[in-house]
Length: 214
Image 1 (cartoon, rainbow, N blue to C red):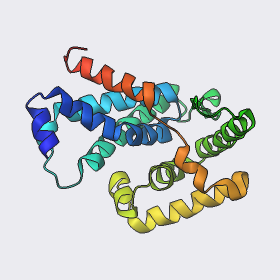
Image 2 (image 1 turned 60 degrees about the vertical axis):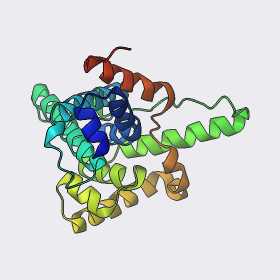
Image 3 (image 1 turned 90 degrees about the horizontal axis):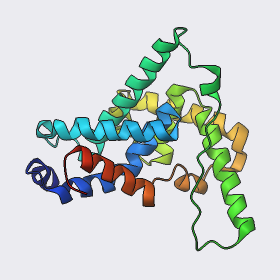
Image 4 (image 1 turned 120 degrees about the vertical axis):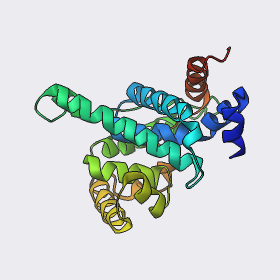
């Protein structure tokens, strides 16, 4: 609430802190819905603008992160619905259903080319399998497993009963295991990264839209 109060007073650093704390979570949630890197960034930008323009409505009933996540998923789902309506058939085009693979930035400290290649291939498999999940299962999987939200947070975010979240997560895991087998576990923590330049770029873009100097 202190950060919210500072942001309402047009404290530039408060906006920056809020975004840097939430960028990765919101990006992962958005991408879990729209399945496109650039569009996910657009969704997060718009979600921040919507949230910041209605920041006085935040009462602290849930955490700021949960509140921002709800706005983000609503923005992402709204885009998806508009996209499907525009296509006329109620389905995404064949090209849009192909799995999108994020090109992961590689750490300059990782000088082992074999390890680097193996990591890239495994992460691509995780992302590809996640993208291929049906919408209802994918959003639950991204929130619960990749982002690490609790059952209750996920249920609140998606407007579902906790039991429904549990059932969909179980089904999502079963579908992924067909493709990934034993590779699901620890590597998921590194999937869909959003840090470094990408995080800075998004934060800077929102600050500019809020009329803060560079």
